[in-house]
Length: 315
Image (cartoon, rainbow, N blue to C red; front, side, top):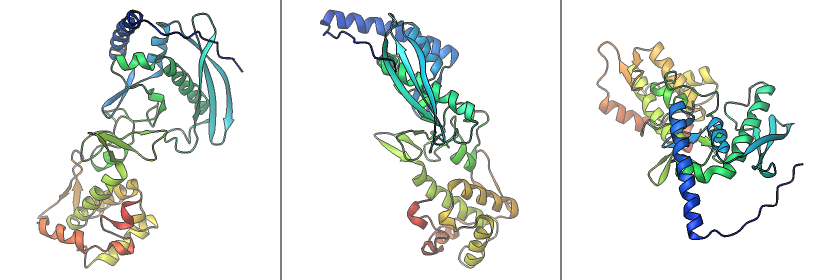
């Protein structure tokens, strides 16, 4: 195992500290120009996360080089260690990273050689970030590399290919983790997060919570537009859900709920506006504003079939 170099530490004088910050700010500006020209970042919510090419470019400006010390198979994927060498060739830092393990959204089913390569990529960007994130922040970027944000690397959707409407709520956005229907901001998930969310003001907007209610509303609208009476046809609606998915409405994932809503639009007399995600009645349609509000209260959540609070909002 490579040994870390013993680095001399000493306090800088105010003048030396100002000079170091001034030099870092100039390098940050140069980095920002290159990153913007080459688009070497991934936008996740309000933050821009640098990709490995940007970290390597910045490392050159400080005389840093990197090596892969080892890779090894682990349960579900691969783990790798990258080391960073200073201008004199001594190892000044290292980082370990995994790929393909539980919760790794886009990589759990990838071929082994791709998982191994991505584990190395993540280790390199992480190791360089330990040394250089303070400069990246001066350039206005997130200190967390894009490769550490689950769902962002080489497997997400481009903006032009991303699903829209209610499908986009679940699988849209640049990283393929969905776009918030309330705030029109992409969800993301870091390694430390239990589920996708996005920053909103001083707090967070949780994907599961917001979709539980919005998909319930879309489901009721789809039922009414397709000619169902949610109260009178409750048993029929529940049987149809079980026949299609083998579970109750409250037990379905968000993707399954979207699939079922779209199937109503195809099988019934309604269609979905792909731009807004709204259910559009066909033909004479129904004036359902009052009926829809009533239906939201009539659907019995206690049986785990329907209702915005079925399963306590959990999927």
